[in-house]
Every structure is written in C-alpha cells, then in structure tokens.
Length: 330
Ligand code: NAI
Ligand code: MG
Image 1 (cartoon, rainbow, N blue to C red):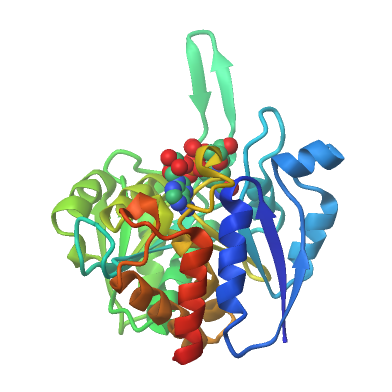
Image 2: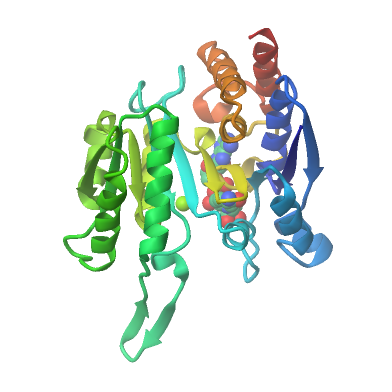
C-alpha cells in the first residue's frame, strides 16, 4: 500500500491529474490517495498558496503527484516552497521520444539531472550603486549529492555514461568545484563512463548530436535552461514529465503550468502527467508497473490518439480512457 498525496492545483492541473489517476487506477497496486491544496484557487479559498497542511501531507506521503498551479503575484510559489521545505535536491527530467508524437528526433532517450537547491537560484541579489549583483552559490556538499544521485541513477537505470555540464573555463571557482567533485565521485563508479562539456557547447550538441547523451548532471540554472531545450527536441511541454527527489520525499509533476487559456475544455494533453506517474512508480521501486504505463501510453499515441497540441483530436479524458484500457490489457 502506497500513500500518495495528490495536489491537482489550478487550470489544467486538475484535468491532467484526473487523467493520470484514471490510468494509475488500472495498475495492480494499492494506493491510498490524500487530496491536498495549493495554488491560486487555494489562495482564494484560504489566503495561502501553499498551506502548512499541504506541506505536512507531502512530508508524510510515500510520494506526491503535483498537477500545476497558477502563480499568484506576490505570494509564495507552491512548488518552490515544497522543493525547499522538503530539500528535494534532485530535479530529474527524462527526455524520451514517443511514437507518433511530432518531434525533432524520433529515437532519443536520455535524462537530465539538475541540482535544485543552490547556484544563482538562492535568490541572493542586491542593488549596487551602478546596477545589481547576484551571488552564485556552489557547495561541495550539494555538488557531491547531486553527482552521486546522477551516477546512482545511471547504474539503476542501466545507463552507461554521465556527462557533467558546466562553465568552469569562466566560472573557475564555482564550476571548478562542481567539475572537481564530479570526477571525485565518478572514480567510485568505474563501470559508468564519465565526461564533461561546457554548457554552451552542450546547448549546441543537444540540437546537433543529442544521441551522444545518456545522463547529464548539471547545476541549477544550466539545468533549468537545457532541460527546456531538451524537452523541445521530443515534443515540448505537453509530453515532458519531471521528478523532484530528496532523501525522504519526492514530488512528480509535468513540466508545464496551468495553461489557463485551454483550461476547462478537456483538451489538455495528459501525457506529461501520465509519464510523471510512471516516474513515480519507478521511484517506488515498481519498474514493471511503470513500464506498463509507459507502454500503454505509447500504444495509444502510436494509434494517433492524441490531443490537439500534438495535432490530434482526442480529449484529455478520452486519451486517459484509452491508456487505461491498454494498461488493463497488458
Ligand atoms: P504553461 O505551461 O501553462 O503554458 C505554456 C503553453 O503551453 C500554453 O500555450 C499552453 O496552452 C501550452 N500547454 C501547456 N501544457 C499543456 C498541455 N498539457 N496540453 C496542451 N497544451 C499545453 O505556461 P504559462 O502559460 O507560462 O503559465 C501559465 C501559469 O502556470 C502561470 O501562472 C505560470 O506561473 C504557471 N506555471 C506553473 C508551473 C507549475 O505549476 N510547476 C510551471 C510553469 C508555469
Ligand atoms: Mg523552467
């Protein structure tokens, strides 16, 4: 029995969450779902975008599914607060082509592991007499745990190589430490090939020779940018899942936001959310069930059952029902 906290959120968040739960329900595992609130709707109801009760429910769950929220200006970001409070230091972004989905490369399969807690995103900025300055924080401890996570992931997922991405030629101290720690950790994984690239070259290679990558590990901001670039290679926001993983807790969410323009129309693409649940099952050490969802989804896409963003005519719930049916048949 797995205790799953479910945060549908706003806009299409609830629609893609319903779709994902429809699929998950067909898997032969026992779940206890607990609903939790966050986002704009939550703010209107209770005055907070991320109530303590939600944080508590995420903390005590085996895993959490997060749909998407609408940002409320001037209020705390729900997902950033959760990442920080629960120390979800690893952001995992699989990049995988799907059959039938229009994309630049039909046969890509790699993963980006992004450090999620430091770098320029510590938000330590100040104005100076002439402009502003931001501090870029890179610690050995955070570098080591993200690099270790990447190598452990590579081993667990049967992947042969890990590439560190950095800019140590210019950021000699911060990224110098990141690269140094990378090779220190790499030495205890002799079975995994280790190499490193500069971030600017990586941005180019992602377009020109993306098959070269297996696992990429990188600092927070480079990971933010490269993972969006990589998502575009395989079909964009509607199909990009992600995981935020810490020592004790984990949250699985599509990369996209609440897409208010298409909310309430039953046309949102549930693929990213469904793939996020598969990532969750993998994290819960149920790789066969995760694989079932992945395969069921691929069968459905292969038949051309897809939402308008991918050029199809399927509805969100229609796609969910089709995937559910395939899961039951597998
Ligand atoms: P968005 O990801 O919601 O939408 C960007 C574009 O992609 C829109 O054209 C949208 O229609 C389309 N799109 C996104 N997901 C789709 C799906 N599943 N199926 C079909 N089309 C899809 O980003 P946007 O418009 O910048 O932000 C909307 C709201 O979401 C904002 O309040 C933003 O702050 C928030 N947001 C929340 C995130 C989260 O909850 N983690 C992440 C990104 C944005
Ligand atoms: Mg981003």
